[in-house]
Image 1: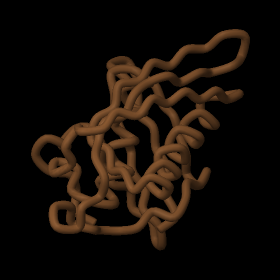
Image 2 (image 1 turned 120 degrees about the vertical axis):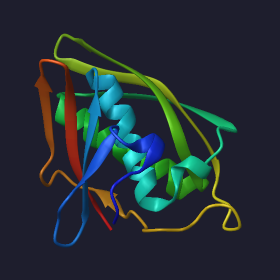
Image 3 (image 1 turned 135 degrees about the vertical axis):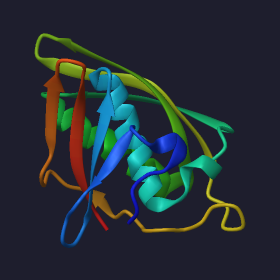
Length: 149
């Protein structure tokens, strides 16, 4: 798989993996890194720049830690894609923590898969915890994940 180009440059990068697809998504904060991880998932499947923002889906997820929240977020996106045949290209998330519970609330925008419009790349079967990382630095953070293809 090629590195992202154009509009996607700087939002995520591919991470080498022998059998599945890994990525590292960047953000000024954790929510933006999660948004860009969502974008990476759909870039595995298609060319996200061709996915119009016609439908809006609200998402709310809670988990016991940030790693579980990242897993559940990306797993939810795969589930929505599989059940509703939707592709997403834009996300707006807010992540909060209260009493040890992390909550993600937000929206995803996209449209139904149309084979005449959307190039079909690689099918994503499931999320994994393999090589998952969440790191914070002086100017932002990044999250890393691997998806089963």
